[in-house]
Amino acid sequence: MKTNTATEHLTQIPLSKEDFGRVKSLLHNYSGIFLHEGKEALVRARLMKRIRKVGVSSFLEYLDYVENDETGGEFLSLVDVLTTNKTSFFREKQHFDFLNEEVIPSMKGREFKWWSAGCSSGEEPVTMAMTLFEHREFMRDFKVKILATDLSRDVLRFAKDGIYTPEKVKDLPDYYLRKYFQNPPGGESGFQVKEQVQNLITYGRLNLQEKWPLKGPFQVIMCRNVMIYFNRQTQMELVSKFHDLLEPGGYLFLGHSESVSGKNHGFVNIKPAVYQKPGR
Image: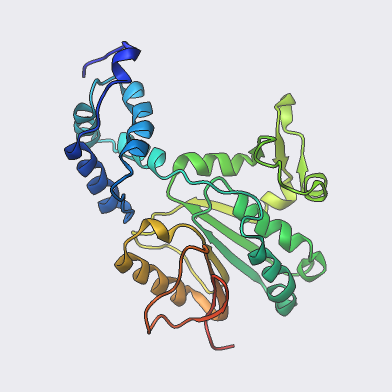
């Protein structure tokens, strides 16, 4: 394997059409994620980090290295850098208002079992947990489980640590910061999610394209701003699997740029980007 320490040369490495096609195929075949044309600059910028780390001098060499790495470690690193997505606390706040005002009060006396599918760095499941804690009187004697999954190992490590920079929490009301966050150990800067909140969440790595080792039923599944990366066929398959895992009356939350399309999806659209499985 060649090494190259000339940074000025690395900045000039081009991503050819053929290289981009190989990246698209690798990612799509593994995860179902489809990289559209126009993403070349993003792919190049993110994979340059791995080229520097591995020590090769072209995308051709790097992709050969990925495909010949029998450990599979570098392939997973490629997946990690290409699937890191933006998120925030209380993103699309009306969804959490709906949980707070409609869903949680209707579940008094029941076990809570929710899933954040595509949890990224943890802001979504933490927001779900904080929303539940605001109804602590409903939770006192009942089990609460929030499953949080993502494809990326990097964001899952971040989510499990539960430490967020001031920039990450800048839009979070002071009330939530005071009640559900604390100073990190060892004088580290930032804000750490309190143990009582993190204890409600189980984090795990899951490729939505592979078999799901999950047992339902769930009352709530959030898969927001994830399906935009899949083609229509994959989207329909995911919606069907979500439907199977929801209990009758359960809710599927999507991103506002996403929708459940087709005639036989089995859901009723009750709010913007909120779908309910009929039955209860």
